[in-house]
Length: 148
Length: 148
DNA sequence: GCAATTTCGTAGCAGGTGCAATGACCTTGT
DNA sequence: ACAAGGTCATTGCACCTGCTACGAAATTGC
Image (tube, rainbow over all chains, first blue to last red; front, side, top):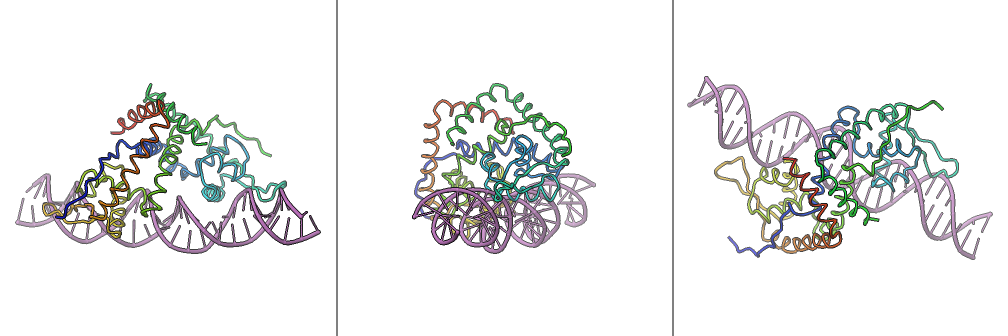
């Protein structure tokens, strides 16, 4: 047995990035599984759909900037959604590099079912956590604001 | 233009699982890039290393239970770390299904450099966020405790 | 004691991800 | 007007992940 240089004490459970990752996974897992099983939708796809439901027609660049995704993620999510018939794309005649993404009727119908699920999930989280929810959100607000 | 069923109002920016995911990514990105560039270590690998540095010899099952990873993730992270010469494995003579993972001298040396980086990162985060940090942690505490 | 069940770790497979490069298009500067 | 440079979206590649099935070993129940 060779002797071992002493290591600083470090506890992963107290490490904020780790805690955030676990919390993120935990809070999204249940809902994500629901819409995966029910609609075959992944998280990146869901983000794109939500953005389209909220903001109407937009380009890849637009989504990328607002939904914390890389542009290739958006592009591939959009491709899968197009193949599933949930969104459609047209060219923007004013700038033919841009594409315009929008929900199809099918996509709208699905979102009409999906969004209430998400709202219920959020409401339940708020209720379950009570005051701690407010603290969490205050902390997240500060953290997310400093990002930009 | 066909008419569109009205969609519930839903703002992704106010959705806590989304906010947590963005916050997690934001807080870990800078550090993760550092140890990736410097040591070629991914996040799953880092988690395994931290656990070994903190808890000494452990099995895959043990890590899996404590570090919020699936067992195949641990197994593959361990494989890569073994190939890199940072950890080693022995059989457990008392239960030959279990393996005992531990840091090699190289692994110890690397962690002696890596852990202070993580501590500094954490300290900086706490300092930057000030009071908001305390709120964030209070919220996370409640959220993470209810998980189990 | 020994078959049935459970636990532990690994690996095959299909599909997802990150990065860098590409092609199409627009803008700028001269 | 047109070359150089920038922006937009996509794709090829290598790698990583998630799932499931598997073999080896231990435990349980009869």
